[in-house]
Length: 360
Ligand SMILES: *Cc1c(COP(=O)(O)O)cnc(C)c1O
Image (cartoon, rainbow, N blue to C red; front, side):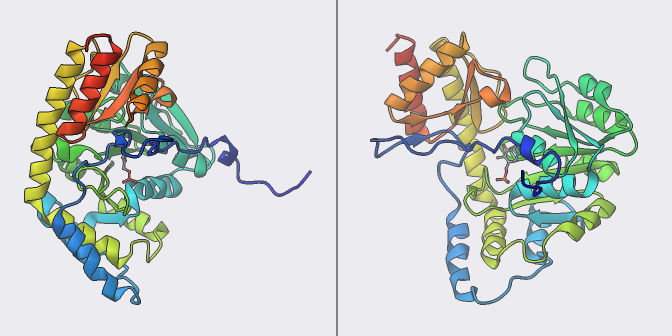
């Protein structure tokens, strides 16, 4: 047998399953499986993207200064403590690589985002799964699971795929209760969908053990371009910059993201549209007999009577050209995660679910 073997933990990684995007024989699918912005990026972002075609022979800057300044201006954070990455996934990877290794534990919750586990195993550390309470992150359960080996605790707020949030006081209590060697990572991928919410930035500033991650993949409609950022204490950001490749982001990524974040009118319009259509869709599904927790993000976790009913509804929706997300891998086999699309998509999926339930 070959003696060529990967590092411990690597073969335990179950490859990430992305949202499906094609259906055989269907030309016009309604894709509601990856929490993408149905309206795409702002025109200003698309113009910036096109302009960069003329500079492709130049290496990009390594310090991301202009993008960090734009993020600071718009989000009211200190640009000196912002790090930019290839999606927030890369920030999660840096955190695990820099702070967790063999013998260390990294906590994620029962229905938590799958990248936390993948990055933990890739770093050779041990993922520890903690129960949630009725699809909501349970601070006491996390604190109970902490010990002297705990290095990182990941929670998304709002959470994916549940759409639920924990309050600021609870998050602060979690940060305060962690052992001294542990970092709390607040994944704010959906923070912009919550009106007036800072994603945890104020807590980052008030503590020395909290890091926030953010992304351009959701409300900014740039999932295809791969840009995210993190905000944390200066010492931690310095550490993460040491493992970051100097040219991790292209000029195209940097300039497009800068234009996107500065177009605050567009972001606000997307937030308001999402809130209106999310409420409409949740009510339409509830009237059809499919309840959901109140969502704070750009998707709804639709609950069915059983895993079999969820699977049957998923099959029916596909037959109607609609792709949603099964979430068995997130221990929610009786649920389907449905992205809030544009108005026509919301009407189509609501109509199809009603028909599935025998009410149309
Ligand atoms: C979509 C999502 C992200 C974003 O990942 P990117 O790498 O920035 O595209 C991060 N966390 C959660 C919980 C998500 O749902």
